[in-house]
Image (tube, rainbow, N blue to C red):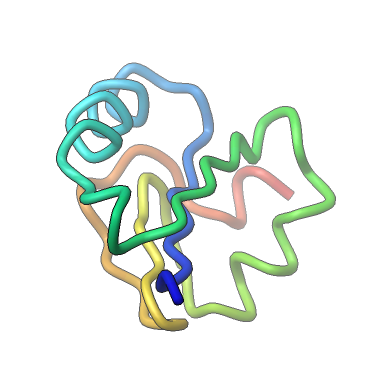
Length: 78
C-alpha cells in the first residue's frame, strides 16, 4: 500500500517552483501524491491546518508536515 503524501501550495511563484521540483522527485511507486492548491481549494485549508501546516509550500507525509520554503502563511489564505 502506498503512503499518502499531500503537497499544499497557494499558487505563488515560490510554491509553483517547489511543486515542480517536489512532484518530479516523489517516487510514485511509494507515495500516492495529491497536490492541493489552497488558493482555489479553500475548503482544504482546515485539512492543512489539522496536519500541522503553518505555511505553504509544504509537503505532508504520514501526517507530518515538512515546510519547504516560506511562500505564504495559512492565516493569509483563510
